[in-house]
Image (tube, rainbow, N blue to C red; front, side, top):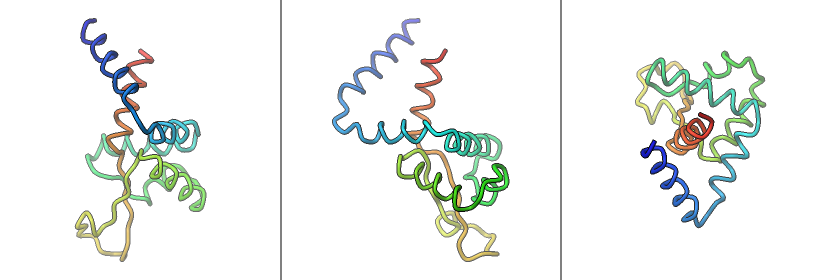
Length: 122
């Protein structure tokens, strides 16, 4: 119990010391949309299973969402700092079937916010 209280105290100090709350506001706004929560959940599941970033094609296949809608939601998640976009060039991907292939992974901010939300919900 004391550990939980110490963690809560640290989180409250962190929130009070935040000078720029734009990052937190953008992240919470991004998470307020069900489609973006589904996308983030799929990326997390994929990372948990494979310990690797999730390819765009897998996200599209899992969610069965039109490309323009998916691209829009991924953009907002990136802007909110919840996911990071990588390319096959950044990953030194040996599969060079395409010249450009995007991968997505959760950011440390996303993990921090989700962990804090999970702890609060318990």
